[in-house]
Every structure is written in structure tokens, then in C-alpha cells.
Length: 155
Image 1 (tube, helix red, strand yellow):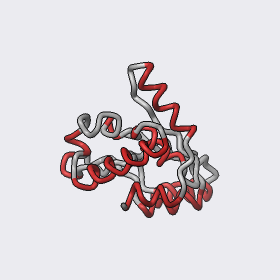
Image 2 (cartoon, one colour; image 1 turned 180 degrees about the vertical axis):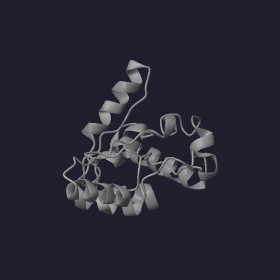
Image 3 (tube, one colour; image 1 turned 45 degrees about the vertical axis):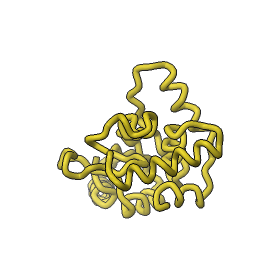
Image 4 (cartoon, helix red, strand yellow; image 1 turned 90 degrees about the vertical axis):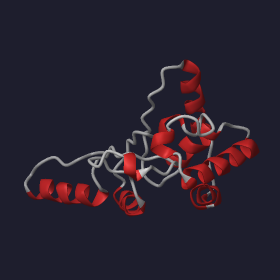
């Protein structure tokens, strides 16, 4: 739950002192844009600099909040306090449009968005229902193009 820069610094220290470094990072990360005012200030949400650094280091990301608390699975009804804002609503609309084009669910699109990055990503799923797990697992069947990724995140 650190920035990629802090992880690099810790791993450099470990190497210099004959210690084992970190082998993965567990920040918050999803297609949704967090409402910073209600977030725990001790947690880190993956940002553009982190993504660039992880692309270079190949250190895996094990993101929690990978489904934005169900925001994309429920048409924005779940996790409103954490994710309902103008950016997330726009991304939800684009995920819904892309899901309709691809014949899948918006939740699968949101998870596929994480899985397509140039470093290992192992999303944490906190589902209690078998059908929600089956939906999430369906994301591995999607391969999004760079254009679709840009469309989802930036419009």
C-alpha cells in the first residue's frame, strides 16, 4: 500500500543490506475515480507515476477495491460514497457502452481494464455470491485494445 517510488526505495535498501525486498504491491486501484474526501488518508490509490514505474519494474499489483465496491456492477448504485463523482459516472457510462459492444458486463470491462496493463495484476475480489464471482472471472476472456483503455479512462 505504498507508492511505487517508495517501494523502489525500500527494495534498493534491501539489496544494499542483503535483505529480501518486496515482491508485490497492494494499493487501492480500479477504473473508478475515488472520492478523496472520504478515503482513508493512510492508503494509497495507484496513480499514473505508479503505473509507469510498475511497467518498468514488473512488480505485481494486487489491488483491493478492484471492482470499486461494485460500482460498475450495479450501474453506480453501490459504493456511492467512495466512487460516485463526475469522473466515475463518465467512466461507468463508457464501460456500459463498451460492454454492450463486446457482449459482456460493465464489471467485466472494469476488471479487464486492470488486467491489460504491462505488469502482473491480481485483483482482489470480495464477493459473497457465486454469480458475482462467475461474472468477475469472465473478465479474463476480454482483451481490450489500447484505444479502448484510453476511451475508458479518459473518454
